[in-house]
Length: 316
Image (cartoon, rainbow, N blue to C red; front, side, top):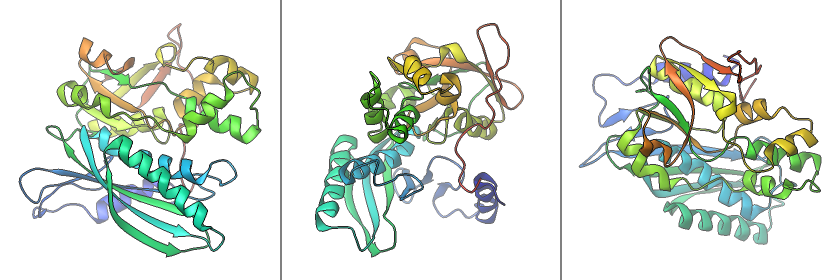
């Protein structure tokens, strides 16, 4: 079980829900769990930001880290077409972490809590050799919780916002290429994931399946397709990117198509729905759900593009 997703599949089988689910509607394997202990279901998810895995302290301030960590966790709630309600924050702090750093970290979390609506209601503090921010986010679905399973052949594939900007921002940071015309804007995009609560009404009304983009659009779409038992065809020319993206990729010798589809950390939402004007209000159509399995990316001539490794994997 070297691979991250092999471990997840093993965990899913180990803790598979039996006939007596005791109020657990969805367990391991989606963006979030769904529980129902009373009048309506609730969404629960957890996400960790670990120093030197998800961030380096020389690349991001403590305030920016706090903001980023909470929004990234809440993105899983939005992917279930649910309204964020609360969050619990578990912090491990190294001995060198000053009171000033601690306050800045909390201020970033507080800003994100205000922006997302996920009120911080508790958590845990512990000493450690490295800094980690682990966020449990809770929400309530607008209607039936939206799952990764549910996409149907013939559905269109949409994505909110743009793809690749966050990965490009990290590349700018790591190469210190701040002289690029749009460089600092892409850096800001990596540090501050988007607030996608605006999409919830449409998702709840028309989407058949959804997933948030954390490990790369192609890889995360693959999870949706596997859960739904379908395949997908994407058009590279339809993938939305930000102003200055192509020229900035060229300046850093990066493949713009590969980065946009495999770069990760966009925290946008990929969703499937019957093609309609409502879906187009919140997303760009990038492909189509097909029968079968697997995902293919086609160029403008209809030829398949080989993008190699599909996205980020822990333990790979």
